[in-house]
Length: 295
Image 1 (spheres, rainbow, N blue to C red):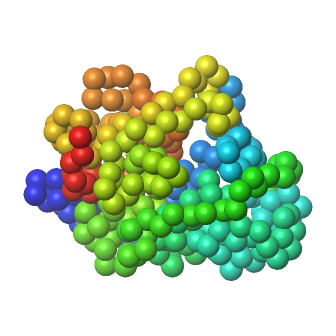
Image 2: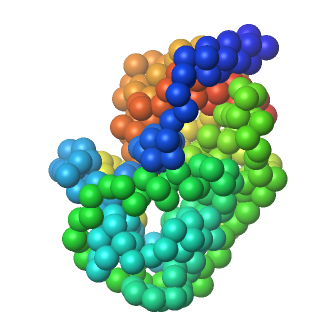
C-alpha cells in the first residue's frame, strides 16, 4: 500500500502542476523518447552505443540475424524515399499497432518483423497512438536507405494478456494500472519472461527472467558487449525485486545500476528510460510490486 499511496500522491501533484495540457507532438516526443524507446532500435549509434541525435530514427540502430528474420531496424523519419514520409497517418498507425506495411513502397503489403512489438503496442490509447504519429511527422527527414529485410519464416506474433485486455484513460489515474500500461507499451515482459520451445510463458512465468541476448544475434550495442540474460523482476523476496527499495528499482530502470552498484547492460534502454518523469517511474515501481513472485 505504501508504494501505491506514494505513486498516487505523485500523480495528483503532477496533474496539478500541468497548467496547460501538452500538445500531441509533445506527448509523442515523450513517449517515443522514453518508455517506447524507439531509438533503441531505430537510431544509429556510435561505437560506444550512444545514439546519434542528428540521425534520430533514421534506421539501422540495431540489426538482427535470427532463425526467423534477418535485417535492420527501418528508417522511420519523414523522408519520402527511404523513410515513412509517403505513408498516411492511418498507415503509420496500422504499422505500429497491427504490424502491416502500406500497399506501396518498400516491401508493399507485407507484415513487419516480429521484432517490432506490435503485440504490445496495440495497447496504445488512441490519443497516445495519434501523438506518436504526430511526433514522427515532426522530426527531421533523414535520407538513409536500410537494406531489405529477409523473412526466413512466416511472422507469428504471440498475444500479451494486458494488451489484449486493453486500457482506458481512467486507468492512467491509478498508479498500478498506469504502471501496467507503461510496462505494456514498453514491452518490458517480452524480455523479462522466459521462452520455451518458441512460446513466451506470460501466464506461468511472467517476469521470471532468463531470456538470453547474444551478440551473434543482435548487432548495434557497444563494442565488446558479450551478451546478457534478463533478470527476474517479479516480487520474489530474493530471486526478484521483493527485497529492493523503491529507490533501488527506480535507479535500475532509469540509470542501469543494480542494487549492488553493478552496471547493468543492454538491451534494456536505460538511456531512454532516464527521461521518464517521476510519476511514471513511481507507477512502474508500483506495478512491479504486484507481479507474482517467481523463483
